[in-house]
Amino acid sequence: MALHKWQTNSEELQKLWVKEDMVSGDPSQVIEPLGLPFTVLGVSWNKGEDSLYFDVQNLVTFLSGRVNWKRCLLQAIGRIFDPVGFLGSFVLRVKLLIQEIWKLTLDWDDDLPECLSLAWN
Image (cartoon, rainbow, N blue to C red; front, side, top):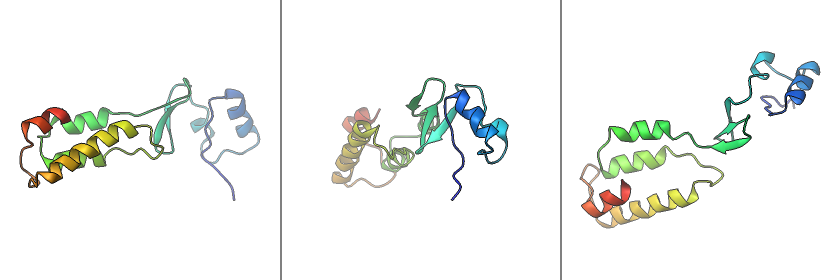
């Protein structure tokens, strides 16, 4: 089985992979300037800083045009992909908020009560 789509922040190792013909596809895709993000386990990886991070810009854009409804809250939490559990404390708080909303038996497009709306915002 040939593994591909390798990434490293070591320029020396990248050049070795190209030299040993271990790179599938376009070799220029592997030797990119340091600092460009790649995805590792569904999480963005900054090679230059060797750090994992979550790009929340898409989520913020999605939420900017939404209203405080149960439907929108569930759509927002569904957009968070965190297979490793780095955002566990945030996701737990939102799940507890969803639990409170379900206890109130709100319809999908009902406005959230003020106390829950403040907690969400």
